[in-house]
Image 1: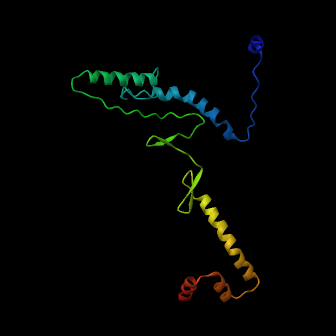
Image 2 (image 1 turned 90 degrees about the vertical axis):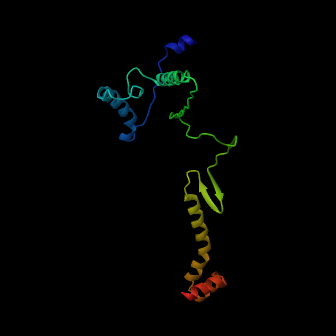
Length: 173
């Protein structure tokens, strides 16, 4: 069985190109291969020797090894200490969400929530809240529109739809 799988041709991947932007990842990879060597040859020699980005034969392991060596050499001196800060800019493919912990407890992620009567979405946008308010306003104004359509006087509309305080505020205008 493994002999058959070993010699079988791979299945063709078919993709439907709908616009030129579908070629962008391929174009950028080719562009990087063509231009990278030219750009790195123009980098000045005055760059810090500990700056490993775009340097030939350098990697993340070199960065860690150099930082560890510098820290250990400094710690050999009596009464010295080292503070380190590691910042990881790498990203997980396909996973944009990370767990959030407060006081050791994992905080549950929700798409949206309601706080003080306001619907707030995950990206701190108000579109759900706005559409809900618009929907409520349309529902509440429907009967007023029907009454106005049937030629009910404005005085009667105000008296049926406003509270006493609102009517007094309208009269002051």
